[in-house]
Length: 148
Image 1: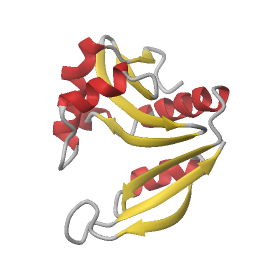
Image 2: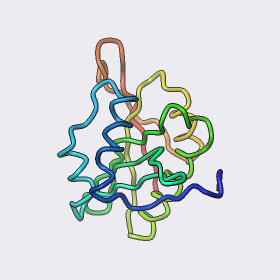
Image 3: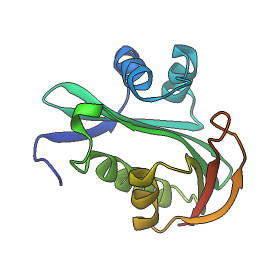
């Protein structure tokens, strides 16, 4: 593990305000609190947080349909990037998905987000397409998938 004090745990409703702060500090179009709440309470969705000394420093949200999963967001607080926290949270999510019979995982990432692209490729995700202007004019999404 990257930091012995880092704990990856299932998110609970008390984490919504911290997840929203991560979203608003990192994403151009942050999710609304109801969408985050749905990640936590819906049995077909997963939400895990990276907790460091009681502070939520990252999270991942994903939705499961049959034997496939779509990862919606992986966000690390800007002050904690580059420390391997996203790697830890993604590793744990992928292991949980595999144990639960998920066969394939999908995600999209902005074409110029080199750290995220590197992380996903390190985990065996492959590019299979793109969506033009998905994140706004000139901001294409790279579509990626991984077999578990």
